[in-house]
Image 1 (cartoon, helix red, strand yellow):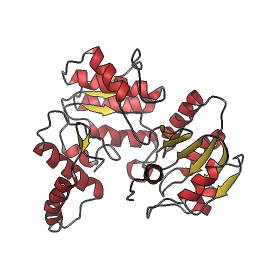
Image 2 (tube, helix red, strand yellow):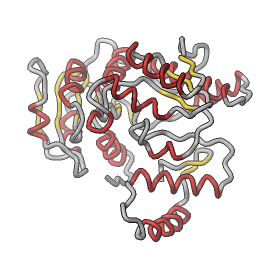
Image 3 (cartoon, helix red, strand yellow):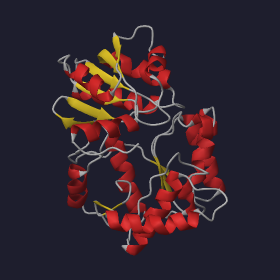
Image 4 (cartoon, one colour):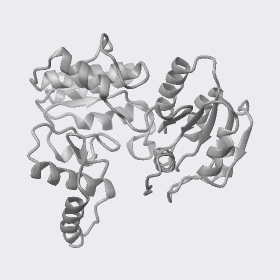
Length: 320
């Protein structure tokens, strides 16, 4: 339900259940069963229609040509920095991944992009030209506003968001922009869940680099007690290569999903110069051990792990 919100409110349980019941009857008649993401997207669009939403923001899954969200024709497309992720589906090179990501472009509709690697930029420009999609690259971060989210990269994200709204022809007052940016919440993105405990769902090298930069900006000269886990299909060695230098000690634990990588396998991905590590049987054990170190605790490596951590630390419920 947290994936489907209208004006900040999650879809109510009763409405969610009723719409899912309808969708289940449809799915049972289909030769190929839709994925969880596809069902969630359809559920969201049904709910947005019920609520007569005027503006809809859809976040892609993997992004690109075969992403389910492309079934909904966008009025403006937003492309954040393209990196090496979902390689088993999108391609083994940055150029191949960029080609897939460019599939989000809608003929004749504008697109806004963050600054990109030159290889990615060339691909996006070529595809935008073929689709006659006006493509604009953001050249500077949005400055002069208070930001509720940590990290320089969030000012670039803010510039993307504001530019997309301008492209839609939505008139924005500076006080409205300031109000929104000073109050925006993004669970699991350098989220200080409680003093000295930070959650970040960095699950690929690019997001790990952003996390490392944000850590050094907010905790200069300090090491982290790193609680880490990951799922299959990710560049675990690449992530740990970036995050290990932040840590005084690393606490490896499993995560509650069928795609989880075993703790001993995680240990094999640690770089040779990594700090000492411990292998823990549960997240709770890893957190307790990390808290005993006295350093700020950083929980990272998987959004599944962050979800489990949030549920535990806020006494909520977690569903893998």
